[in-house]
Each structure stands twice: as structure tokens, then as C-alpha cells.
Length: 284
Image 1: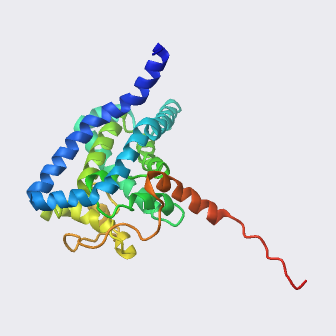
Image 2: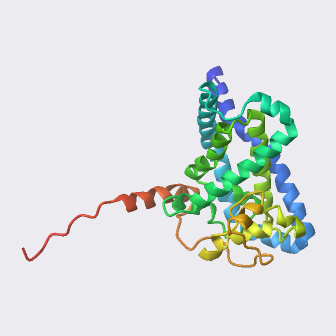
Image 3: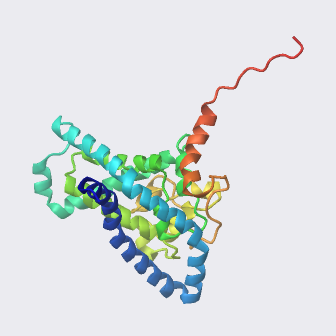
């Protein structure tokens, strides 16, 4: 194989290799938690029920790794560097040095989750819902459901990073925020009945987020934060009466497989934008 083709293939495959290790570790960890929580028979039964949806989610992981993710990362990097070069960031290096690394990371996660809360509420608006509905389409919610995300929806989530950069947070704090919120996202999507007890006064739990994925539209209008439940409590969108046994997913038809779900919001927006033609009067 020609060297340039080998290098091109390596660039395509490398992101998948980079993600394989963390994903495998998560799969083993959540499988063990399911076994400890439910027992092996119920855990196996749940895994079989979710297998079809998990295949779609895994397909989206591959597409995101080789296409969507790199393109969005480049876009965010350009915006972040532009903000820094033009002095449009509100913070500065002396501030982070004074605060120290861990307090700065904690601040980035808290502010990032606050921004994410409001961004998530916007994604549930009429015009952005067709893309966000893809994320809600799993009826067997698992940790891998976090990855069921339309590229347009994923671009919206990266706006959190842009806004954090505009607030002046350093790149290493942005990276730490992304890691914390991403892996906590796996936890709250996991098929676990945990409410976290008293800790739920501060942190979002798997039970709390499961109510957000309920098929009931009114219930799904709650619990928008990723890490901290305090935002939902503060702004009147908190809902957790206990572990969620309600049906999950959406009633609307989002198409077959990953390809159908990628096409769904585009079809919806095109139909909404189509101008109806005036009807000819047959009696004229």
C-alpha cells in the first residue's frame, strides 16, 4: 500500500483506536454495576432488550469519531484561538494562577454545567427539537445512549466550550470540564435506579435523568442539567419522585437506523420551510 494511503487510513482509524479503550472500560464498568444492582439474569435480559438500539449508538460513535468530532473540534479550536488572539476573553492567566488548578477546574465544571442547563432547555424548543429528539429516541436507556446524538445537536453542546472560552477559562480547564461532564453523562444515562440519596440535593442522578427521557412530554420538560441538580431546583425544572419506571423514548417516527435518524431533522425542517402553493379555483 502506498505510504500516503497508509497515512490517510491511519488518520481515519486512529480516533476509533483512541476511543476503543475508554469505551471498553465503561462497558465493563456499567455491566458490572448492572450485575450488582439487578442480578445477572435481569442484567442480561436488559442488555438483550437494548442490543438493537446499542448498535445504532455504536454506529454514531464511529461516525462521530471519524467525521463529526474532528470537524467540530477544529471549529471550536478556531473560535477559541480567535477569541484569545483578539482579547475577547473576560478572564486572564493571572486569575487562574491566583485561584490554582483545582479551583479553576471546579469553576469551569460549575459554570459549564450552568451554561449546559440553558443550552439544553433551548434544544427542547420547537425548532431545535427535531435534532434533539434523536437523543431521546432510545426506549431502553443505557450509558451508551449518551452517544445517540445528531451532529447538529452535538454542535450545540460544543457551544458550552465556546462560551467558557469567552469567559476566559484556560484550555486545560475546558478539557477537564469536557471530561467530567462527558463521563458523568454516561453515569446519568446508565440503566441504574440510583437516586443518590442526600447527594441528589447537589448532583444529578441516573433516576433523575431517566425522568427527563420519559415519553410523557410534561415529565420530559424537567431535569436539564448534566452534573448538578441545583440548576433544576433553582429554576423550577426539578422532578424526581423516585426511580423511574415510566416508558422512555419518543412517539414520533424518526426513521430507520442511524441513517434515518441523521436525516430526520433535515426532513422536518424542510417540510416546515416549504411554502404551500395556492390552490387553483377549479370553478374559475
